[in-house]
Image (cartoon, rainbow, N blue to C red; front, side):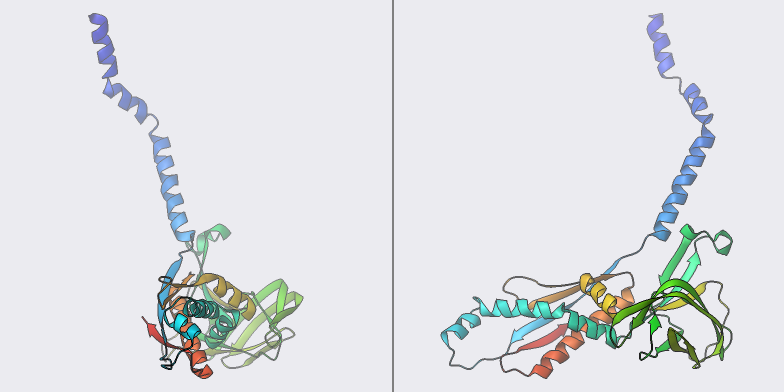
Length: 300
């Protein structure tokens, strides 16, 4: 009986167990801290993916009352109408239409904000965050497309006042792009841009030619601790990226509702691009003016 009581007392000796655990309190605190920091870094460094969509209603125009047998089959939706919708889905995600939308939005220049999670004092590369500033641009860059330009090169800028801007860029093996031919023509061993320029002044070198304009709407210029830069893009590369990010589907096999979905890391750019793409599509079909074409309605 005594043995069973001793065993029971040993099993219920929580006080001793707490003291044993307490001896390892440093490890518990350290592991918890590491877990919290890792979770914080994961949230800050991970890329947020946004999804947006728009809808088009495809409605066949009225046909002549005297239909051929094939037209009657199409009218009943047995094969012709579905095939036409499939063709329109292909047009919506086509390279030509997407490239047209990219050109209309002037996406050849992208603006970014560069910062570090814990500030400039801990400026380790793995702590760097880069965010595209699509909706709050303070500059407009005019590219001379008749000249060769460097793409994917961060061109850092500091606004000195309402009249001047400081430009700094350095890169090796930089792709040099021809906007007229829409391809990379060579690679520059070194690109080095550094100097103070007036807004609207031509910034020109062997492989670059552009102007920078301030769009501050009369607001006071305030110094910023975070770094900002812009870079030039390949239009064909952008088009292929957007083509991969877009999906056009119908709600059902017999439906005329087309849903265009797009994924990306900037919700404002996605919305603008979808609007521009659908407008380009509507304008394209209005220009065709074919008697058997579809009427298109945009649904938000």
